[in-house]
Image (cartoon, rainbow, N blue to C red):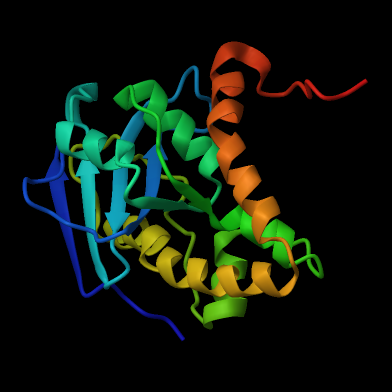
Length: 208
């Protein structure tokens, strides 16, 4: 089954005033590549899990975005990521804020779905939600002034299902007795991001 967003709004530079996402918001980012030192933030996507997605473009590489920054910092709103480590680092580097209250569906998958080595968003959505995601636009020019309809749909799909996945993983983690372990991992992410940005990205500080 393939599902689409009810609506997708594209904003320039920041979220509009007055938006509310309740107590949990799905978040993703698109960059020019995966090198934090080289590849800038181009797009941030958020969704409250209701089928509506908001995409924020950053034209001219300007990252003031007070509304988006306030949302990321709000401890009363859980930010749901898939591979939070990268997105949180991008948010910290370019928006200058720490993401408070985080749930990472990739960490949850690694802890709960130990019967598989397939933990990408596409695989997780297919198994747990029977949703087919297309990844054709993953490697495209996200700094383009005008995003294509295919890019917009792809960007929205990366946040559209994270709220539902979190609900699934909450139950799975509880069933396996790993809820506290997951929460400890989520809590460590802020420190992990600090290490990544400070130059310890590929170094295990806990190794002998």
